[in-house]
Length: 389
Length: 227
View (tube, helix red, strand yellow):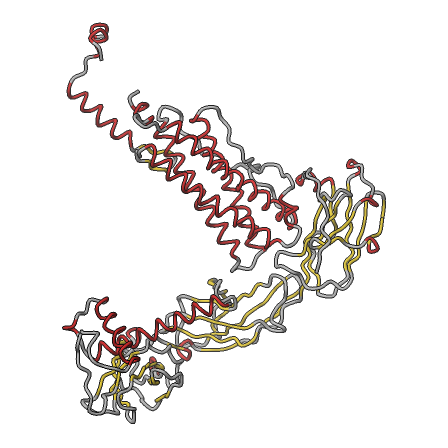
């Protein structure tokens, strides 16, 4: 779309005095999408300009004179029917010019919608210490004008209403309450959305902080072989440190996958043990394993909490059938398989660069390298995808 | 000192203890404090070079800042920058000798700061919270404050006998009173355009000052420190 830009002479108008020399009414109005606006530009007689010599522009585009109306020698109006949503958050620029194109006055239009009722309000607590709430904007999800969201909360049976203060720039529809939360008593929580065209309030949710607890992933996850068993791996972990003393009935889940597969298998009948054996695995194969925790039974509560994030992947390989990897540092030795040879060369290079040396050679080191390769491959793919976007 | 001077003024013979005390006082004078800025004596060339590098960085960022600003105000914003507004610092550096010009740079930095702050406040209301414009404005303020402190210290080091630059007073006339949104857009454009032009002039000025103030053999600061 071509905008009708016009030639501008280099003599700037004096802005500070233009507020007395010329003005637009209404100034910075907010209007619903589809509204019709009639704005008037009034100029001081001292400028020596006649209204018929003025013209209007909206967002840099000159408006047709057929939409103008000379109200008086010093006042020119323009009518804008069916206004579309504002192009930018700072408002659309409706400007009154003299015949030479100089700016005499301007008004910023905010064309949008009143907010919809916020929906999907959910909250969770990390280790009972804090509360994070997230919601989604209601309606069409976009109001086109600045809309303020305020998360409010109060204890259900007593106490005064409070406002959440820590809003995230990264997540616009979330808020964080860092401290001073009561336990064993329900909160009422809701979100109010307000802009210049109206307001809306979400449904109120009621929760006890102890019912929405999540925690950190289990720490110290280790995966190891079970003797020479070709199809077994043993997984061990520790309770998340923050809730270690309270997680008597915590539940855990394990998921694992083949190194070159994206499909996870999940084991969720583990209960509150901190070890588990995986069976029925493929011999001579690298597996990635993750563990997560659900703080069930926190402070005696019978309710399930919220699953933690998965722990960082830990890799291990099942023994080969009848074959053992020999630890040679000579990258030129033996194998005629070019893929395996290339892989071994990469592995030995990595060992040398990380100063492990041949004395530290073990299958565990090999597994660590496989995990490292997987991660750096993922990062490279993300960078490539980022370059393409 | 020549013997002639000694004969003329025998009463100026100073005892060893007093000389030691004087030397200590001179060392203490190297760390001078002005309006909360602690300055340490720096080699002439490297201190100005550092300020020059900082100025180049802020100038480069100010070009991008102005571009980002215009985009976020919508179409027609190029026109806003060409308008004139009272009370916005002009970009010109004044003064005849190096000390006056250095003082002018310092004063201008300080004068721009409340305007940058006002633009940031206004744009905080006008832009979404994640707007890149807001973080760039904040960076510009921080760096300009840093540059002002550097210039302050260089001034004190090179011209210790001249009055310490007074802190400019943020009076009620230094930033405009409350403005409507359109006026805010214009104001911000004018401030950032003049800020960019000012930094361009400071870059040229610091190069000139470096050659004028820092000679190869003698440090101007050392000369001044000897009374």
